[in-house]
Length: 99
Image 1 (cartoon, rainbow, N blue to C red):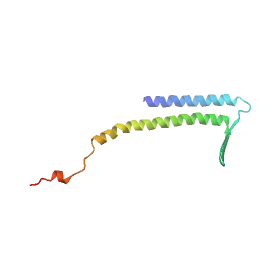
Image 2 (image 1 turned 60 degrees about the vertical axis):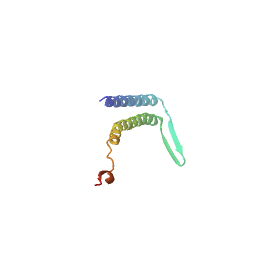
Image 3 (image 1 turned 30 degrees about the vertical axis):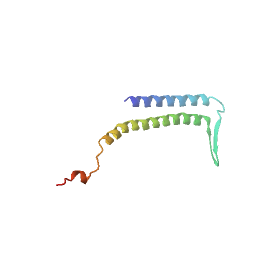
Image 4 (image 1 turned 45 degrees about the vertical axis):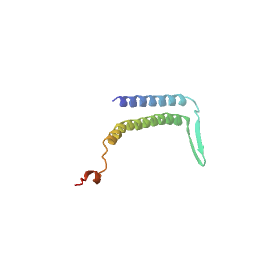
């Protein structure tokens, strides 16, 4: 329950920050643009769209990392118990009694 509240709280903060950035940059007559070029590939977008995408992308990556950490915490105890209860290989020589 606590993780859901953290997720919803940070999502609300991300949406509010994106909204405020949109309002602030939208107030200018010409808010500008962003041009990213790598080799023959280029991306051109408005500064508003880039800022909102950057904020939302940051929070998506942050929560993806938190989910991975949570999965690692859940898997950790299970791996230890599997190692402790691992079945030993069967050896006929130890079980055979010479008579």
